[in-house]
Length: 281
Image (cartoon, rainbow, N blue to C red):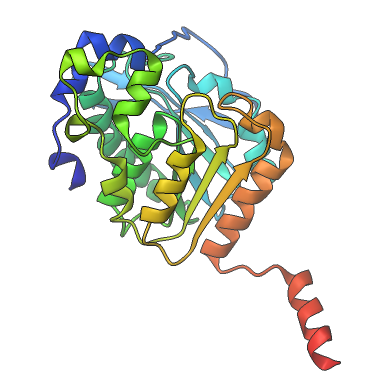
């Protein structure tokens, strides 16, 4: 299991955590129509919140880890967009975020990702939801998504990285962490490059052209290091880290839907017919 290969103690220092995590509480909110809340026990006395925006029982399931300043309720208007495209969005929080208990650290975030994955897998089985399971991470959440993709390749049908980072130290420096003073090197980091290099199933990377926190070069590095035969890289022109979804609009969900169609072996019928007609002439 990949998570047991690496230690993250150096990243659990207060001088890192205060910049890396920005937990925001959400005491009580009613799920929008079609959504359900599902708390997950990650440790004795600690639960993290999750909100599932569910489509049909055979729909692809996107297990989603959000960015460091977000919570699952921020996706209440976005979840239905996934549903409209025939996808279920299973959004999860970190410790200290939303209705979750505890305090976030890098070590707990990575450990919790494994517990969350197993709980989600069991929930899908118990609910007879047979669609493929795709792990997706945005920004900080890319660490969890890559951890799971590398650890459970047999159970993961695909990987989506939105605004993900390749190297840890440049990201921390950008956020305001004095990595040199704290003695943090890339060897102490999250090792996203090593993790993506172990995943050979379909992969989709989406990144903003003008991302001010994680330069687009980071996405290009992940793309190059990914050994998957089926991999896509979509750069969003004119967007930055926080406007990628607004800038892309409905195309964002269409790109993800086309990606899951490939995983399911579904063909785009119109283009297929066009090719046949051309061949006849």
